[in-house]
Length: 253
Image (tube, rainbow, N blue to C red; front, side, top):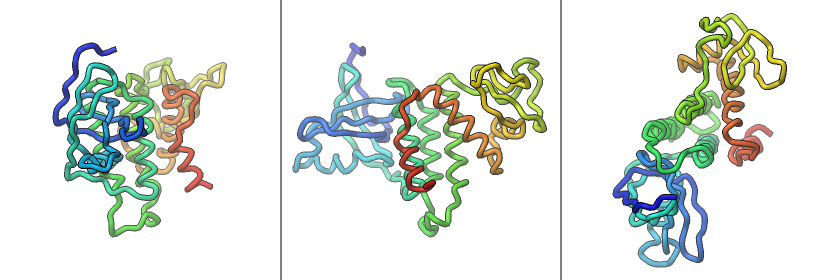
């Protein structure tokens, strides 16, 4: 519980999600660069008055400047202003962006400096924003996969659950790109098969590339996706991600 009054003026923010509150207000889940996840009441923004323009701004995927105040976890939105940054997302890129938002909603700490993740989020959404001259069907899925995997990797590191990608667990020797490993989540790559099933198979080739942020080939992307999905599941719990299910229904059916 936060007892001291919080005053945040003209802070860079994005909307992760919002839902209706009472008859004319919203509760908005903001992501602030230096303050992490923040929940705030946007009072009266659904009324037919001068605040109607605020409701139009309180949408995901537009960078805003906001001012917030309050004494508790649920703050009050004092003002919101648009910035020139408005990510143009559609098709697969839009669902990928919703996936990032859902990860942040579920995992991001509240009232914590998350400047590094905010900057990364900004960069990834800029990459996901399609070139207006290129149709969504012409953009291969690999272009979406690379920034998503790097975001997942860095988010895990930020949360304190970074992966050991560089050396074998038992011996400490560097990963051999020619070997196949049993990856154990709490320790890293091993040549010894665990007694239980709490591991995944992954090549040294992929571990080396992921450790060096080189995700240019399909094998590395595929194995990295499986490893990071498994690692994130340990933090997300059993509740499935809605964005992932929607993406499967639309593009993998």
